[in-house]
Length: 114
Image (tube, rainbow, N blue to C red):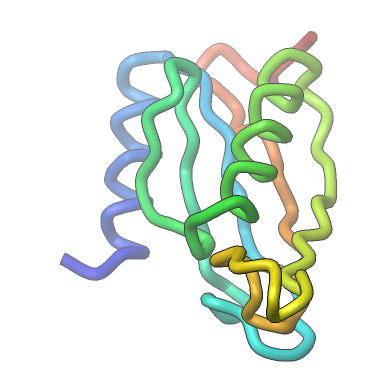
């Protein structure tokens, strides 16, 4: 199954169950990044994920933002900078920057409200 199809199936499950989730989508990249624009990840209210926006500490930043979006029902744009110095021994040294849009998904009961 294609990653996008996995996410769409997970969205349908959330809808059927009435559970809340957010969608994180890479909307812009500059330089070298683990994923390109359009990559997405679904994050459910219990922390389960489907898909990836690249893993590592950048994805951790997006997961933290997803918790905030679930609490407030307000979308946000997360800048993931993968530009640590090469001698840092960090796995986040791709050299690029990704902008990731994190948005709440509506539930069958209507739009999310804080």
